[in-house]
Length: 460
Ligand code: SF4
Image (tube, rainbow, N blue to C red; front, top):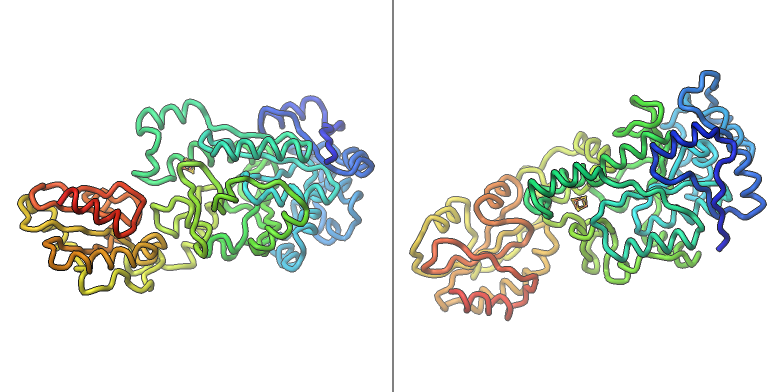
């Protein structure tokens, strides 16, 4: 694969240094354009100053109607500050990702960069390469990524002849978080704090050096939070180089593309992919917060699976949640957005416990019989997956002296379950032995009948 790492030669030394500091520790790179086009277009991108007094806004039509290389020239001299991005999003609604990518790079030149997560958003890099324009790529190294993802970054750099502009968390902030709360605090009090330190603040620093960014968000990735993302928008959450609301534009070239079509594109273009995909991972993030999904499960189910589905954004695209939160009222059971899910573990052998019922169970120090209780949420696919084995177990234990029960622990019951019942993720299985006050949590991910039975029999 052809390689190109030409600096933007027309940037003044001072401006280059300022931007390198803001975006990352490496110099600006452009990549992988065919040699002739690369030379021509790299020369066409002129320096863009943070507050260029003579800059004239250009109209959408002027920016978009011009042919490719002259548009890059135009972008260099006039960032389209007066563009109506809602109108532009409507105009581009039916455009191909390649066309959108070309428009984005043409309009913003060296002030735009692709946010690369190390997953199938590598398609964005391929599209950028195909435009023949210079492009930049940045990524957030949280320090908690899978080894496979780091190897994949290296492979992508070599494949496209680029240097990814990595952003790192502030060492002092990471140190303070880990020393005060440990390495896995996100399992106990939610992922937002860790994501804020390791992802959101480094992203904010990266974006302060840009006027636009390109993401791999797709509508089909998260019905709860991404169903209405536009092709292009004024970023609702972050600021760009010039500061203030409206100073950053967010491009989502694959917003309307199905995941399967992304994969068809990657295979057709022989693009390298993260080896974790072959292990069942779809959405890829940090190692402790990402796991493979089952066939037929939604890809976001593999991220922060111990939390409610509605909050599954790490803060990088938090505008999605705020917007969605305005549009969608909380569900009756406390806000997981799935109050209508049909109940599960429905069997005469499974006792359905109310809150007072399980509180009584907790209080008893000398229970006459052991109780096995699953803490569940009916919308949780992992709970659904163990339904058959749990019901079969309950039916096997009828007459054995062991009671089998369920307690719905999502929504408004969740804080209680987290505080009193060791709930971290769904499903959680607890055994209340007959002579011990404290319930014992089933520690394994194996949820077949034999494994659960062995747990009960060894501790009852
Ligand atoms: Fe921390 Fe997990 Fe967020 Fe990564 S995804 S920053 S490990 S909470």
